[in-house]
Length: 67
Image (cartoon, rainbow, N blue to C red; front, side):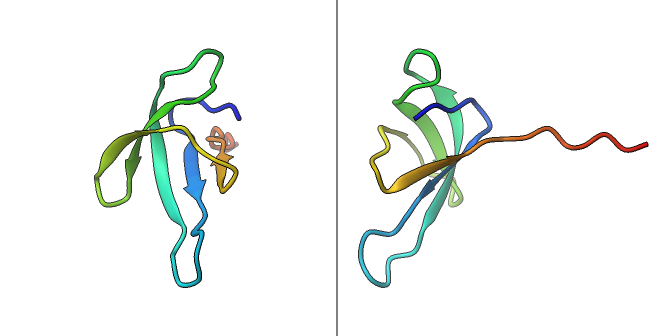
């Protein structure tokens, strides 16, 4: 798994009824974009995570240029 600052980390709920959580990656602590990551969840909580197989990185893409 590789990520950059500004990417989103989607952590899928692991049990029935548990919602997915989305966090912004605010710092990459590993080498070459690898975990661990410092993240900020939607409620403002910050923590360091080493994502497991229930997580997906959504890469930040630049906005398309308008003509």
